[in-house]
Image 1 (cartoon, rainbow, N blue to C red):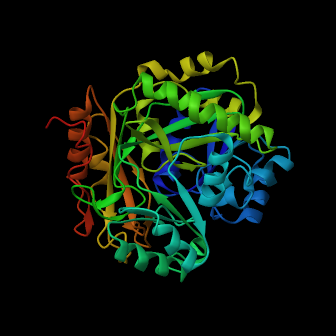
Image 2: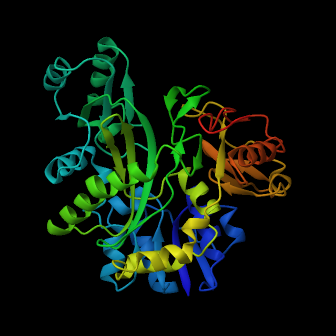
Length: 430
């Protein structure tokens, strides 16, 4: 079968790498892809948010399955457009994807379906927002309602900081994304990411992961799209997962279907494991980045049948069979370290040459996934994004996986690149 994968980040590179291993797959086409993905299959210069261009490309190559990686094309209705053309698509409809594209919609849905989450309010006006803050104690969680590339969440440690951030958001700090904001009570606990592959009825649960969102060592500094991750996350034990299934996933899937917007694709649940049990921090409509990298690396089986059944239906009652094809029981400890451009997540320069990537990939158990890279006119690999490379490794345990990932990172010759050295501090012994 032929697959068309939409996207150009390390998440999509990891998906392409994993799908290409399937005996069912002949070719993985990518749009727009990146230099790493170009070594797997043909890449087409069509942007992930060019819905018309992607529709035209799909009609040209007629793939058997389309996998949509990023959130923006989902929010723009790419899945709907291509399903209407008769294609099988792994990715939710635009309406279902509002679980990510609108924090307010997501919170309202949780409230309606009885899903545990933090107390919240939705606001477009400064006075209303500040009045709600009066009912809370610090710290305060402030979220841009719309898509903000993983950077639209601010945890204000004081009321003064919260007031300033509310004013900045409603004044356009995140553009249209923060024309409305959600204010939440701060939840105490340990956060984890749980990924559920679903056709709208059945559900496959991938190993839980944990990522590090803040740019600085010790989980300090501004939020980023993610500086590293690992899986499986020990905080999500069998008891926690059972509650996630019963209290979060099942009510959400049933409620979405009953309201005429069945969810097909991967549902990413940011969960806070509190003393009162798991509560939802946020939903996303796609695989996380960098969590996807560790999930694809740690899975030893074939993910393509599961992607296909989620796109076409028939998963319910057959979860064990598709889980066995992925070899969920044989998942290996996996870690990923993000190499970012100096200055990220603020302004950064583009065009610096990166050397040593091929050498890094020769470390045992390591795969190097590309994110913000390109090839210059001289044929050299250059950094063009904020997050640039993901050094992803498996091992017998977390210590071995992280040691391999950092060994690979140290083989790069890229003076303006940096990574956090404490990724996985919760699970590393050394």
